[in-house]
Image (cartoon, rainbow, N blue to C red; front, side, top):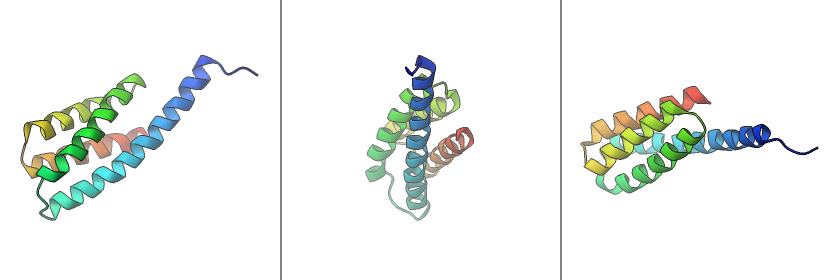
Length: 101
């Protein structure tokens, strides 16, 4: 049987959800580090990388909440905001990912 476009798209969405869940775990670790006083500067590159990838893919697969949260997080990380705001944005994105799973 030949796979339909819809079936392939659904498989891609499932892979995105799995990847987003893995990225949420990394973000939770970053939040823990920030909460324990780690400086935000060395973590910003990882945060931006994760947020950028999630923003694009989430939008492609119809996860507007994740996409929006990831764009906000990427902007905050790029702008050099303080650690508590960065941690809060990470928490919100993790929550968005969790709710979409």
